[in-house]
Length: 323
Image (cartoon, rainbow, N blue to C red):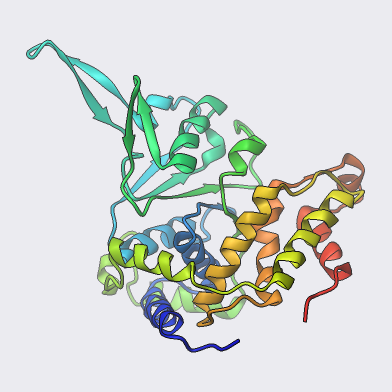
């Protein structure tokens, strides 16, 4: 098993340039941004969970600018209708015909702010686009332009007037990433940049340079398919799935699709690190963001103060790691 192959080196070079450019904008959220890149190259979507003001929107805008793709932002509200997301047909009196008015979902990177603010019917308007990369309006099916990615945000603290995402909707997200407050030293750097004129609403002034185009993303996705996975890694993932199903703390364990998503993400993560093979540590690193939003805890586990990530850490500590 060797590293340093040409595809892996090309992948690492692209990621290095993305990190260098993103550092002009993003402070202290490097791991979150890296996992957003992993999701993009895996053809996955991301749910960012954090209180307002922790750079969730800024990271999404930065990613879109560095990839040089279309970007749109959609604020979910309680009165938002499905047609406000996907679009609708409008009757034109002059031509006596119906014309298609496309919604904001017809883009490449769609930022859905406060996704849990809209009712389930509007949330469900995203399902077909996220799973099938297409939109159906009045019986007409239209493909979305690749790369297509949904980055959604939600506030974990404020619950008034919110509609929790159902399990089927959560399952469409490759990762759920928690965006926390910054350490003091990094917060000082944010304040320093603000003092010297940085404006998060005007990222063009930071001199960002697009690193990749849409066709480059497609090439990287093909590179990821060449990453090697040994049988021991496959068995390791299967053992993790089985462990969630045996856990007395979980009412809804991880599904087979969760395991497939973990495998795909681990291959991309290995490539981002400059390797053409997956290590057990790649899998362990990605279990929490890939599984945590797909699990449902038993009431007694919640009363005991457990959360999904804690349960996963306990399970991983008991599973034999392949050599």
